[in-house]
Amino acid sequence: SSANDARSSPPEPSLVWSAMIAIAAPPHDAGPSTAAMITEPLARTSGIGFALALFGSSYEYQVVGQSLITSGASGTPSAKKHVALYGYSRGAIVASMVATQDPQLAAVVLGAGAYDFSRWYPTPVPGINANIEREAGTSAEAFRARSAIVHVERMKAPILILHGAQDERVPVRQAEAFAETLQAKGMAVTVKMFPHAKHGIPIDDQYREIYPFLDASLR
Image (cartoon, rainbow, N blue to C red; front, side, top):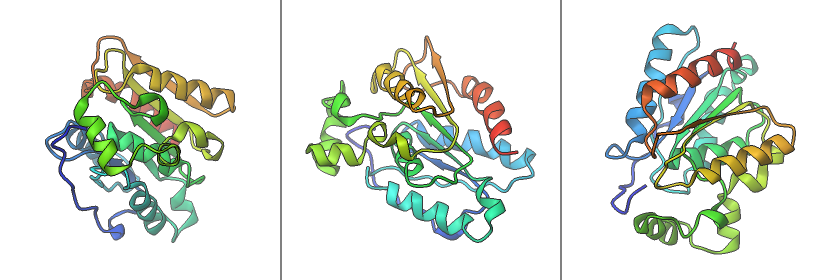
């Protein structure tokens, strides 16, 4: 989510089956380390297969994310209900949009994401503004295509939203407004705000929220 974000190559769809799919930003950002720390312990302790997909450098990757899920889980209907999606920062933008396209996901975890581009842009960070302008453009159509808040009626899976109240990149109001919109539509949504956290929510704090949520959603 910085001006220096590099593009990363998405993984092959064959990697994903009955999976926890993690979507995050390139290695120098907080995303991938968070994604790895979330999924790897689950892979060791769960009877469910997990694969880690790290991508999210571009706002266009929601198409790839949907391809991964479809290719990985469509073969067995019973496996499909064990697919969860985790996205952090840019990954949360991607994951939230993928969730609007796949009603069979079992659970979605979104951390430090933006869900309404029209109210996020211009952001507090010039580098993020430059990324949006370069990668997405600033038209109403471009913002709508990347804003999960305007597509909540398509979302079916339980959702856990995590956000730092002191987030310096994505204002906490993004999470609050998204949660309120989901609740108004009768969606199953859990919100956890971290009063002292900035954009990088401490991993142990995430564990305490994510593991019980996934345990309830994936079994």
